[in-house]
Length: 189
Image: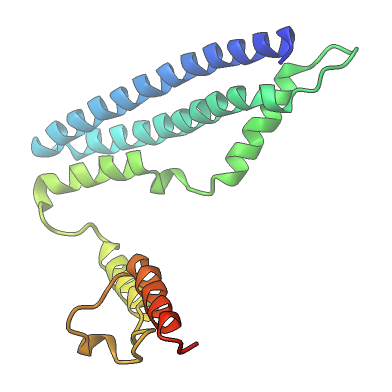
């Protein structure tokens, strides 16, 4: 690695580390906002909770921007092409940020930090109850999982529910190899 490339990597690491520190501070701020919202919800100040919710959405957007920037800065040394012309690092970073944001399809409403905020506020008065709309997700997941499960044993052909001590997939190769080696030793194959 050339001296220039080493300096670029080191500079990118420092800048990315600074951005990651900011991301961590944003997480702490969102956590504090969550605590405030719980207090407001207990006191029946739903207007203040709503305002905090809007602020958390803004903070989540900034959080995502900052996280993307940190990731993009770290990626720049890998895409940098030395040349005789001055390099426009701002454009390189912007291109990387747009790639990262393009790969992320999650909306702010579904962001884990925002969902945690809403769930925490919801649990103040509805502890143990699913949030509106989550009941449907459980039903969809259950029906999806049922269609994926094996219904017959690949070795015996018996229905899985009739097996006394079924083995897991990672044990299957060992058992199959053992069976094959026994049959080879007996001269079956």
